[in-house]
Image 1 (cartoon, one colour):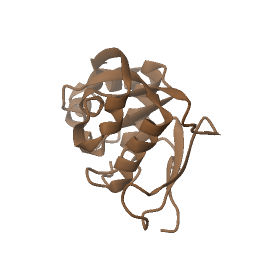
Image 2: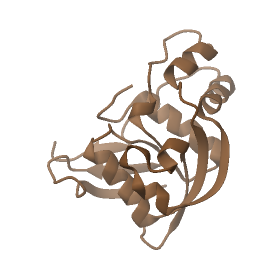
Image 3: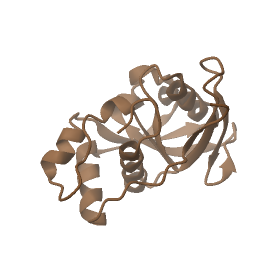
Length: 174
């Protein structure tokens, strides 16, 4: 896990959330990742160590400007780097806070301000936690199971967990 940059554990978590919610994109917060998953066999205790909070999976509809606001909050690093799935964003850490996002694509297509996206996140962020007010602009369409269950189900389904490839959050001019 990493706090101020893209994290393999954060990407794994966001992938599991996006898959479960059948969402276009997923976001989770770096502060919600509390322990690394060890190499070798995993059990429920390892998952609970890594994801100890009783956050539910929340699926919502979010407009392009709100999606960009979520990324800008993550790039501020005020509460760690936002962790993502289903998108690729480039940001410039030398720019002023709230102006660091260079561009963002969902499924290889630039995010449009007039588009609505199906977004998965955890209940803490959905309620604006860690300064992620962009989520509160969305419309909740479903509240799911506890996040640790989403991760445990994902681990059981894939059987062998491998770190997702990096490159979802790309710093330019760094």
